[in-house]
Length: 469
Image 1: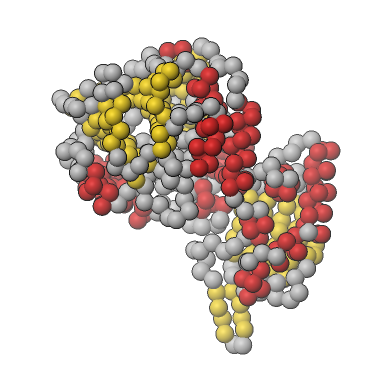
Image 2: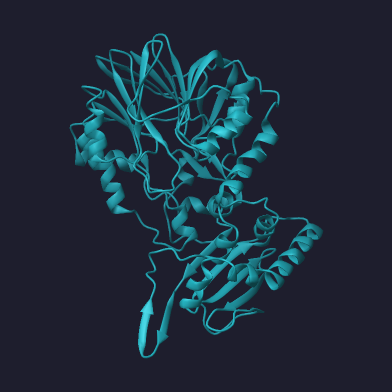
């Protein structure tokens, strides 16, 4: 028998008779650049968490790879002295984990079995576009039952067929159900349920034919001033998915699974034990805050710098950058020819305190130069908080936070009329945005994104007793 406790979001504690495995631990709120919190919130008793033999990280996204939690675990007694750490072949993740003193890390390979005590782990691939960070799901077997945790991985029918070369039957599957839209909001893309992607989740369950499924890995929300994004980012819910699954493939048993619930998987079946954990439980059931309502009110961007003198200093540096440096930097990039070709009329709006913004335009239909104020035609727009543009200039900000918190928003209506003809750039495709070209989301930016948390949390004394997320 295998027992699984749901701690939060994508974090599971999986226990066989002789082995305990912890996956994707995120134990502190707020997390992901302090934008998100677990939802529902939890009470976690650190001193009662069982000792862990296997630590698994599925991928580098910050709702799965949390530096604060990993720093805490490294300094605690929760990890056994001979803990096995498994991670994907992601050089940034591996570098950050070494900074946190995780010296021995097993880089996983697709469909290679790893034996640890009485369990066998087999990692399943994610079929992602080129350039995306690697990630994995995994099979876990104890000789009696088999569990598959999809995590966030994208699978194809070929992957599912290959899974069955390694097992005869899946007794329990933790499967994807959510199609996050936070990028759609920022890039002015459709805010609606992506039907093809959502249907693929249902089809995957039907093809996989597990004995039992639990929806997994999407139990967080935006907090505080970023809370308005809860109306725009989550087009479905685990309850909706279970209702749809009952119609789509009624032969597969299913259940909701909440933080603090325990599930026992044996050859006799699956048993759900609500709130049965002795170390984690729901604190407040605030799931109603997450409600897809893309017609809800949208607040304007505003700087996150509250102190007036600090904001004024940042504003002056931003003005200097835009008016004295920006055009030259744009014309030195490879994208300059694209903007010139499409004769872009570009507007940059920088938001200060609430209700206050500063606007510049650059016209690429003639010799590009920056001018204050609006023009008659705008077909490329970027809006950003003054605090975040200042952070980019200083190499202290990153696009995960800026985009994830909607402190940046963009749209385009790219077309040109020439010699009696009309050409346009498809609106469903992203167009190269000037700020994102000047300040690329490169390796240096990604490393610093994690290193600031390493500097903040490494070697901090671990918390004791009970924590409320």
